[in-house]
Image 1 (tube, rainbow, N blue to C red):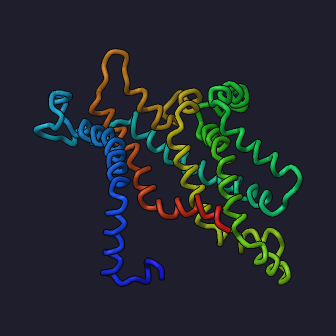
Image 2 (spheres, one colour; image 1 turned 90 degrees about the vertical axis):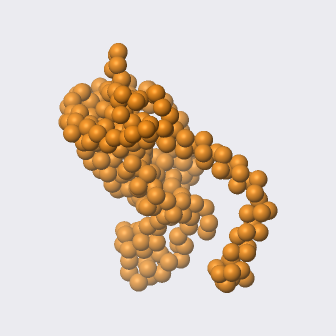
Image 3 (tube, rainbow, N blue to C red; image 1 turned 45 degrees about the vertical axis):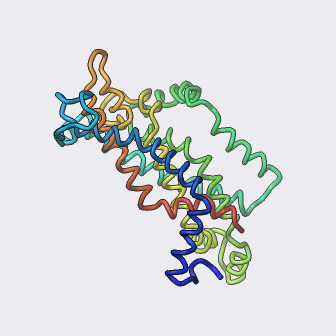
Length: 286
């Protein structure tokens, strides 16, 4: 008998028994959740606090939304926000374009170097980004890609493709090859099997890889700081850093902009967290 087959009253009783038997676990998880949410809550409080009450009261006696409106009326923040949306979305798109075929090839056409390729993909994740910056600079300068969307999309894609390839390979490994063999008997080519069978059956993993690539590109900072100089390509992470002046910091505006920059990530993860988690772990079950 499964949990879903129980009657509603029996389900509630089972949940209560589970909570009573593991109450200490839930207390620890609640404390950890509170510790993680505390900085976010304080960021929101500062964002709606008037400048004259800043750091004078933990909970301000009055609130204002002028700080948030100021962010939307500041070109130095609006344009970077637009850039980050475009760069992150295109990075995620090209990540799937390159990672999916590579993962499918590694999953279906196993050769003697498959293990070596996996190790190399993992090795790329431990290379310090500072070293990559030095390596990429001559190429971007000679190709005219500095301070452009194209340059940042290229750089971010190199960060996301290796790990997303491993995610999708694990997902494709979970798709039975017998289905593809049956399709080949009916006349399907390898490409048709990939696009018409494997991809539709792996949409959860593909969406998980897309979300992962989007989040990675959104929060990337060093490439944007090094390879952009104008508002035309500057991402929001760099724009937030530039709000910190040498002598003064407008904390209320900085926190309002930080909250707005994190809000899309919270919305994306809240909407697709189920699919994201299933896609990340589904390949481990065959």
